[in-house]
Length: 322
Image (cartoon, rainbow, N blue to C red; front, side, top):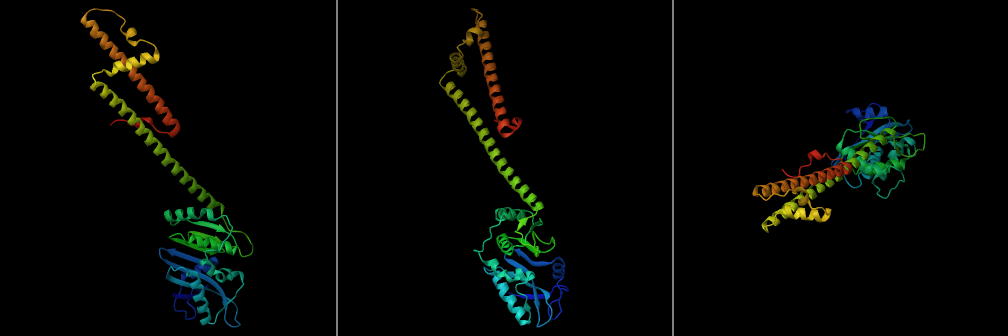
């Protein structure tokens, strides 16, 4: 694992000062304790450490692993190599200091059994989806509980691509900014703005699922209507093949149901001429077609009202035959 160390205020590589890292200067001004940039199978880590040489005063440094391949114990490896680098430069970390809390616990990022009973885990999947779809989105959390920060970051790193910053001031060079108050003991929690973003996304996903279900129900209803009309067509064709007029069958069935002799009311006139018989037949068929048409119209209205009421579909767009 290739590692470099920079003075935090100047951003110059320590101790030779032959190279400058502008990002380290920005991180110093914003009080960044940890910055993680994970993309596909590579990860870049900036970690702040407060250290001193011999009896000199403490000074801040940024230890950087650049373009490291992701391995199972990446943070444990980082901590081990960073400790060795500091030792080789005769720098002694200020263990136990609040400024060094992240560095002191960095190896715990790799511990799967490290737990934190916070309320942020329920949103991990949503956060991952949002970051995947909107890579430039910014979400901020606030808290000082180190265990919570470590575990939250560990779960976030399961996301394919993510940028995380733990800082004392807001820095928008990341997807997730954890604002760490070093003077209090507050649990990790999302800001009100972040809560609103997550709630909106959750509501949008719920509505999308309902739309899919609604469309499936509408499509199923359309298919059932088509099947129903196909059955009617098949029935009429069968009657015709058997030599029966389906209109007579329908009239007989309507007579049974209504108890009214439709033929006796519609062709009540008596005339012995052939023309009158033909007229009676024509009138009977016209009335039958009219009644059948009215039944279908009423059926269509009922179905349309049902679809509108239950699915909000525009019945004008509902086509049975093309």
